[in-house]
Length: 224
Image (cartoon, rainbow, N blue to C red; front, side, top):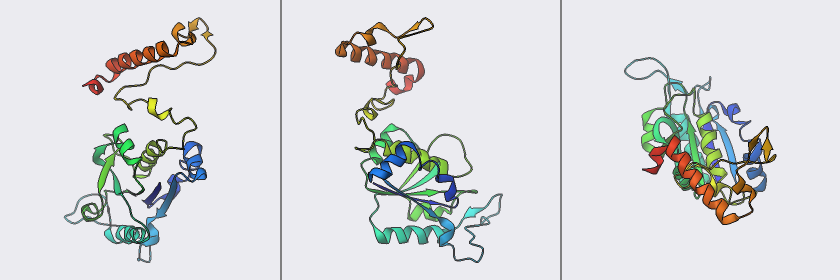
């Protein structure tokens, strides 16, 4: 699976993709993540990618030509399943969306800055707009990193234990059950006896019941 991320500040994405699961996924060849500097596609002497908004108002707007040039170049090289714009007014990212995207082939992700990008880029090229929450960040790079992380870990072959992702919170519209490890008794705080019993069916039943209870308490909307 390939991700092409278009950014005016590609340096912001160096660290998130160079460690842990995302690094391993790339080394295994399961995922390919390529970051493109938007300024490389600007024809101006100053490599400018923004301009004043029509109609006045505060802030600057990212212009059409650099985005269009980069997207068209990428599309001339391969087919893409989605062109995603990370935007506060997009659909809110959740596990269902991550699952949907994990079975795609190639994805382009656009990172906005300033006041946003010219609407015509969204109208002509973008197939999906995704938000990571009801708040505004300085740019789309961190949301892009969140999206890629959420998707890549679901690709078969990425996690050493592929069943791990299937039991994550939200996979079955439930939060995950509490988890424990050694020591079994820490300052009088003990691991539930059922987890030490070795009775797998009863352990799984306990985890399911705990997941339901935790979801009722913390995210009852998921049970609706």
